[in-house]
Length: 296
Image (tube, rainbow, N blue to C red; front, top):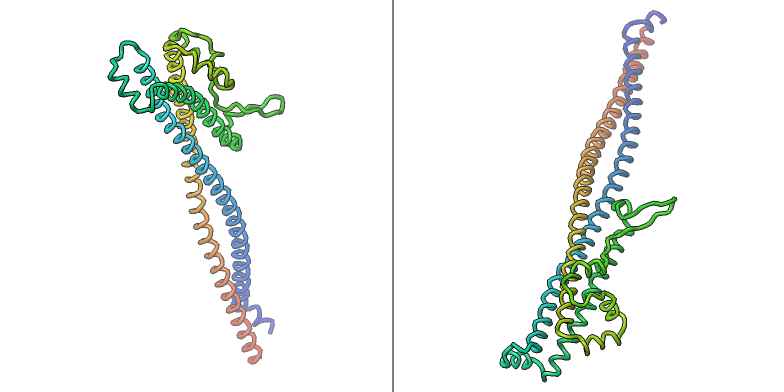
């Protein structure tokens, strides 16, 4: 009996059983490892998708503000020229009477025309300032929640983070054209915004030269709406680079997930085959043992 058990056939079968059992164990461990890899890759993919969605949403929000600014720019510039031109035509002594009559004919009376033109011109100024403030505020509402995307708009001092969002100083806009103005008092225009008496005073007392200065200031304010448009353009280009990078990362993760999943399935199949071969070798070993016992 001892001689038969030490024969090459038994040793070979035992080694086969051991080999396929070990192979099955190793493949099971590889399956576990691949499942861990898949879990980590899927977490990374989920985080990347969140990042891509966030960047896409920010781009959409910035584009919306940019469209608001650009459409306002066109509307305000056209309106500014319209009211100032009509005011000149009605009040200038060198304008033919028939032209003045044509302008006034669009209104109920000459006094109504003057009231409408002056009032709308002054209200246009308020509209321009409101557009500036709305553009700035809309950008702030976007940037203040996106510090990780726009670190340039934040700074840390002594452990405290401060924001420094894009902004326009109306005094600087005024100073840009100050040399063109007769009345160089910036505070005069500030008071029109917040003081109804100053608004009425401008309506009653502005001369043609005052209206000309007023038009130059409002026109430059409108031109400076391009400031927000250009900032948004630069920031969208900046985000597009991040978006492209993250989309490449996502595509790479999807490929890795697909490859890892295929390998996991391959290891599962290999483990099953190894178990089957191990059982088959074990059955053959038992059969040989039974036959050997009968002979014995």
